[in-house]
Image 1 (cartoon, rainbow, N blue to C red):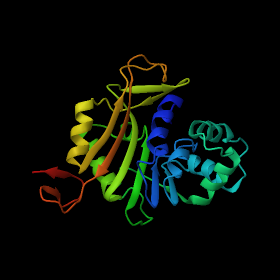
Image 2 (image 1 turned 90 degrees about the horizontal axis):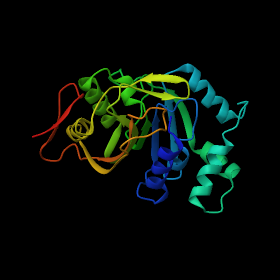
Image 3 (image 1 turned 45 degrees about the vertical axis):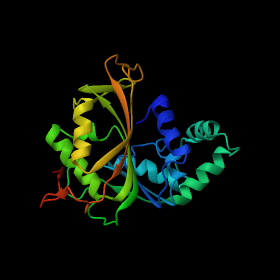
Image 4 (image 1 turned 135 degrees about the horizontal axis):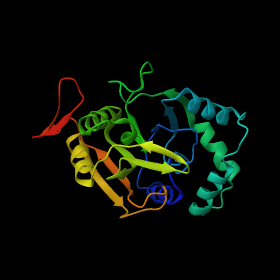
Length: 242
């Protein structure tokens, strides 16, 4: 889940119009949709996904209007920041029209969205998902490769994560995350076929009730798979530069 300041940093990437595409996938949406609102303005269709049935049920109820609580405050935050004179209810209606499905996702599978099959996406976003799934650096790199295979050549990935920490807290809840540093993250995404366009990190943050956590925002672009010097291994899980 994105915090407000991290959400604000991600919002600026999409609000400035640097990223455009037809189809967007949010990996690990969770039980809320606030991390998708700003990104949804840069695409024609939105695909939500999550590992847990409970989270997917909440997203389904939001989409069909049966959810007991409202996400209006999230939409209000975005339209206020974008300052285009848009009403939050209108923005929510537009986003709902773009959502084409809510799908099971498991990043530990070779094909994370199976049994559903999709053509490559133009944009993939994710928040605090890779670090909570990967058990070590090798599995993090495998997951990065799997995400790369879901993305078309020249497509964009925008991620929010944390560095140098083995857990983070949201309120009273603690969550495991893989301890990984900036150099390791950059090397893995470059080896997985990406060019990092923008990298933003804060030295420390109290957003998660931990003074040691370093929030991170990454915007990267998928390189051409057929470009000289780029190859994908036989099992497709790892890409290397010669």
